[in-house]
Every structure is written in structure tokens, then in C-alpha cells.
Length: 228
Image 1 (cartoon, rainbow, N blue to C red):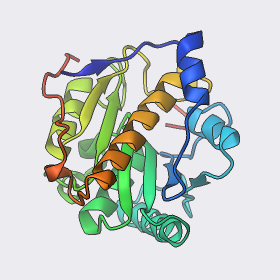
Image 2: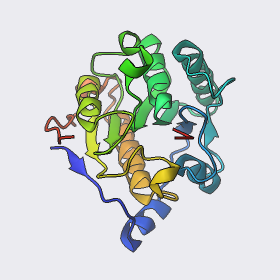
Image 3: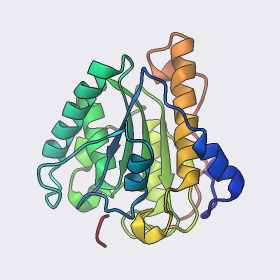
């Protein structure tokens, strides 16, 4: 089943988010989209809240070059591997999702899992052929909005099904960015906590490939600025 989350955070979800703990063997890397994530973006709020997390910086935030951006993701993953034995958990948004997925198709080593939020439409950037069209070898959660102007939810879920992602219906949150008014987005932090638990469970079971883990991606698909 496709999971649905609410647009606003209540006290219980906020409390859950506060308890988020990342094991020492994992390093969280945020991967922003075009123009980077401004101060009101949930990625920036998370980085302030968790100063040990690292951001994948691009040489030119205004130039959405998939090969160049994927190379920066690769560099970030390699740095993460030097300080965390199980590598990086990617927290990606928009075009940052595409850069993360491109790197995963080139070399998934060091990527322990990925939270993919509001991916940009590969066809709009002419990069669909550069992305994986198979189940990724690590757990992923894909979050898509019903009214995202950059990618219809049904299209996002179709891609997520190929990648073996759990599909999460975020409701009507636009592009799930600063304009969505999410602040530190407690529901998103809860999803990250779920992803970290799955990574830990796979490690405890001795699994190295997602295909051998017990969880399956949801298959029922719901219909469908600056700092994007």
C-alpha cells in the first residue's frame, strides 16, 4: 500500500522526530536541488538541528548538470565512508534526487539508503536515460506530493516502483520545499527514522542487497520557484 502522511505536524509527530538518532556507522548527507536549499527549506532546518549532518555542495547551483552533480554526490559518499563504516544515508530533494540516483547507477557502494523527496521530472531535464530502471541495492523511500508542479505524483510513483522504493503520498504540499511551509517537517524526519531502521535491520540480518530484505515497495499508486 502507498503510505499517506499529513501536511502538518502535531505534538506526537514532533516528539517522535526529536528522538531521531543516527547510528555512528551511518552519515547523513543532504542533497539539495536546483539553486540549493534556502534557510526556510526543511533540509536547511534539519542541518541546523543536526550539525553532524553534511550537505553535498555543488560548484554551480544554477546549472543542473547531472554528471557534474552526481560526481559531487560521489565525493560526499566517499567522505562519509571515511567516518562511517556503513556509508551515507542520502536525503535528497528535487534535482538532488536525480543526482543521487545517477550516482547509484554508476556506483552504489557506500550508499546505505536514500530518502527521495519530490524528485524532479527526468524528462524535463532530458536525463531519463541516465537513471536506473531497476530495483536499487539499498532501501529507499520516495515522497511525492499530489500537486507538485515539477513532477506529477503518478509519474514519480512509477519511477519509484522501478527503484523498489516505498511510496509515500505527502498530500497537497506542492514541491515539498520552503514554499510548502513545513519548517523542520517532523513527518519527514519520521520517515527518515523509518529508513534508518530498515538499514539497521538489513545489517543485522547480514544482507547486502535490498532484494534479500523482507520489505517490499508499495505498488498502489494514488492519482495524481526559487529553491526547487
